[in-house]
Structure formats: structure tokens, C-alpha cells
Image (tube, rainbow, N blue to C red; front, side):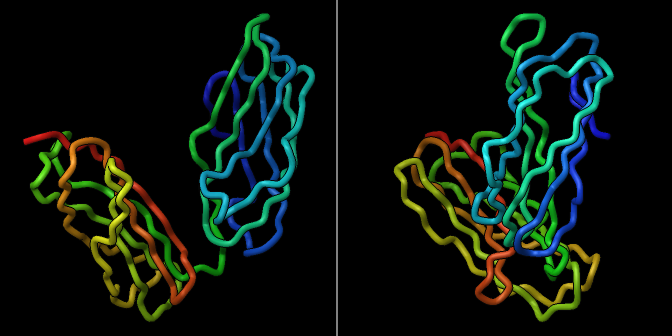
Length: 214
């Protein structure tokens, strides 16, 4: 089981078919204090990719070394990330806990968008081009994909930066594709990469960059 003190946790299964599914969350109190009145939720980081039904579950008391099992119904379209959140009381004080993101994969997908990375200094200068790079991993035999790069400026402008037709990517193969962005405004930019298999979006990643004046 993975752990972030004072909770050990495991979510299964980690690979599902598209459609309605049940995910099971195993929790264990690995600490030395009782955890009380716990509201446990499973949260989707992209509700289009995966929607979690219901409002979670409630655990009255989770004593040291105690375990609990909670079931969540989800509707899944494509591979998505979720995280577990817990709100309650520990030693009489309010208590909040979150897990890192957990990937739940859709088994039939031919590829996945692994990451998007801005290859730049910490604070790039407005008016100078910066390069971003996306990594695509093949999961099944395919005929190539469409990879789109977009940039959301501080003013709210959302512009397409580049569209790339990928090569055929073999299962297990990782390929990197890049695009250049020309930021013209000072402030926080959000860069996006979208991976499409035909008309179906099968991946989305984003990266944050703060642009300064020259």
C-alpha cells in the first residue's frame, strides 16, 4: 500500500474498461492517534475523463492499525487521474489529508500522453520563444495520433500553438514532440497538450509558466 502519514491507501483496480465501474479504496491508520468523523472522497482531476458518483463515505472512528474499505462508482471515458481526500478530526483538532494523484487507465486505449514539460528557465521573458515538449507512449498497435499544443495567456486568450501528426508508435515506445510558444504578456501562462485518436481525446496534460517583463 502507498502511504502519506498517517494514512496507508490503495485504490483498485488501476485498469478498467470504458463505461461504468466500481473502484475500491483500502485505508489503514498507520499513526498512533485515533482519527474521527472522517469524510472520505474520491476526486477526479478531469471530470470529463472520469466522473465519480456520490458524496463519498463517512468513517466514525479509525483507530491505529484499523482498516476500512470503501467503494466508489465511476463513469470512465479515458485514462484519468484521481486523488483521495479525507476531512475529520485528529487529537480534537480539524484534520485534512490528500493523496497524490493516482492514474486509472482505460485498458482499450492505444496510447497515452505521459507528460508536458516547458523547457525554459524558471521565469522566461515576454517576447522570447519558449519550447514545450510532450511525451507520448504507445499502448497498442496504431496508425498515429493528433497532438495539439495550446497556450492560455494571463489575459484569458487561449491560442492554438501547433498541431502535430505523430508517427506510428509501437506498444511500449515513447516519443517526444515539441512546439514553440511566443508569450507576449507578463504573468502566468498555462500550456496544454491534447492527444487525439481520431475525434476522441485520449490524453490531456498541462504545464504552468510565469512570464516576466524583458
